[in-house]
Length: 155
Image 1 (cartoon, rainbow, N blue to C red):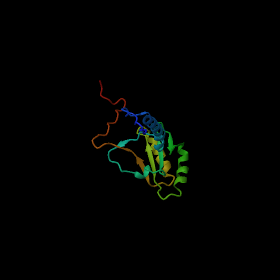
Image 2: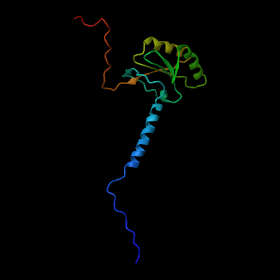
Image 3: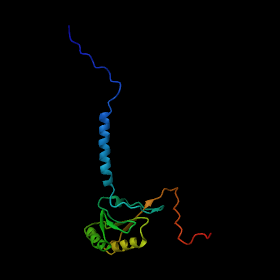
Image 4: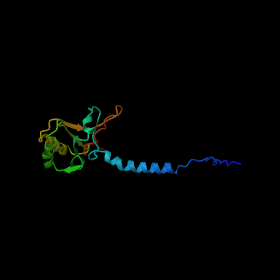
């Protein structure tokens, strides 16, 4: 008599433990890599409706000066003083064909801080300057400016 092996019984529930392990590993990888994808310092840029697309600002070698709402200035990820901007930007653009520098200013940054940074970049010999903003959706209106203290309606 010949031996005939029997097949194991059919499993009615799939084994999801290996899939859960893979998903947890992928989640950890994405959690580690996602902060690295954002270039430069995070600022809440002003929003505008009529904007020009500046794809060159998304390149890895783009020169971006960021001004935060508390007045700190960054060149890429490195904090820098206004006195150092001119020399460092001049060094960065010295052997480049595209001498465009992009300014990312926080919407709540002081106007004077942004003007000082733009002036420092211009004194480095930069003629092409891009001011980066966020694009408003077409159906959204510009927010009204907050009232100035002491000018509200009298009660």
